[in-house]
Image (cartoon, rainbow, N blue to C red; front, top):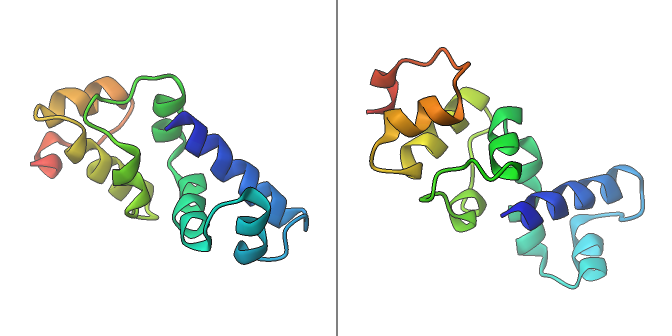
Length: 110
């Protein structure tokens, strides 16, 4: 999951700097499909605390890369709810461990 997050940011940087002209061009440069690039790039829009939890290895055991690649909401609060809801059976406990500064109420996760 960390590699995918790093690759997503590298791909975004290549597009922003003009080293890749399109997602198709980027996919060819990376040796992957255009569809994969299009699923990967939204990872660059993860809420900072969600990305930090992943990079620090603090994400819950139930969170899979496939879940993130299926699509994530753009709103950070919605991401936290979505990711938190899929992380483990004890959603509220995981939520509080991963995002202790969040003001979300546990009722929103149920």
